[in-house]
Length: 401
Image (cartoon, rainbow, N blue to C red; front, side):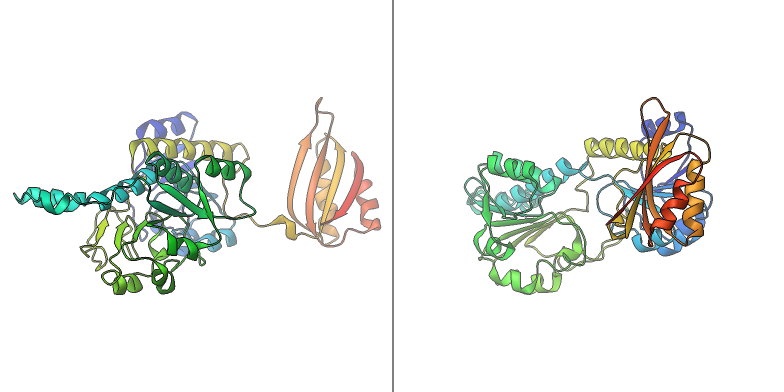
């Protein structure tokens, strides 16, 4: 396959792809406006922060797969990709430790005023009296919002600092994650609002979705205690920056940010943000996942995704439709012979039945198999008889979904 990598990628992993027979083009400086002019002829596109627009997907004549080298896919036009039959996959969890480390780093930097201390020392000023009074972290409460891989890694590190961990009590939480939180001594709160009102620190690790946009709202800020620390290493739109700016002084808030509304997509650019420039805000440059360890893990996952796709398997595909919406499931037991499935699909087509999803399983000995086909339309007794009459079909069963 022809693979376009539109961001930085290690030479070792490029070599792995080339050794597997892929033609790889590394173009790390491509912008979102460059991609539409470059994408023609490529089967796979790999991006980190570069935006993949509707225009890019529309200009792609051979594109089958987009891989986001990371977790968030809000920079990719998912609906357009689905409309054009292009799979979008990501590599979740591979940067979890790196982002968690940065979140804890921001918490410590705020508690000890580290950037301000560095600035004064560089100016030749000794201010021990000013900086000798800090609260410390042990015993303070940290509310973790978003308990995916990153949130759980933050919880582990907070527990190591003897901090009190507060999370939402959700009845459908994964049992293994629930057990891990209990092991860390987490306190379970009924909702986000209760954590905002009770915690010393709130750290956000949620994806960018319509539901999480403006999650740190004027109302939520109003519930926070004076002196609350807010950390956001997730996505910029999660914070109502205007509302935060209005209360930051009044409520004596301290803020640690790695992400911002309207932040540049390029690695180097001019950026003006009144929030980032505020003296109560410590900011970094959206580098939460940017450690060598994380990048190697992500690159490994990208190579795995490409090789699996070539073998007919999708890893972490984020734009698959829900086959649970199909009306019926048709199971075809058949001999493993040339043309049997073509005959089955042709019979369904002639009956006006749309196949939305199917999988064929070959049994031991390779004599026979079973095809599970999800369809939209009514498969009645007459059609079942026609399917059973297809050469090399053993039996047909139909179930309603």
